Length: 108
Image (cartoon, rainbow, N blue to C red; front, top):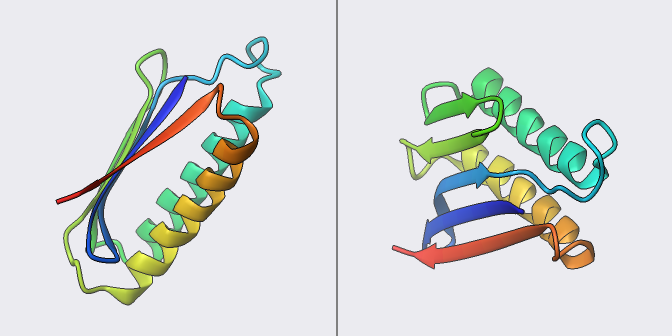
């Protein structure tokens, strides 16, 4: 299962991490995993290109896959737009495929 963890304060996302594998189909045919990977890769690219100093980005590939985004500049509007968009996309996938992806939100 893919696990998404989101920490926020008020309406601002402070931390987002994605771990695990969907296992909804054979390797190379898993559309849930491919969708989440595409969304996460797009987010990492956008954050790196647009606001590289506003976040700490981590990407670990392989069996222990991890994508982690730590917000360093909490008031940065562009960061929040990107992260809120990512969250909306992941929630759409969770609504359709809750057996394979779970999003946990925590106010800090």
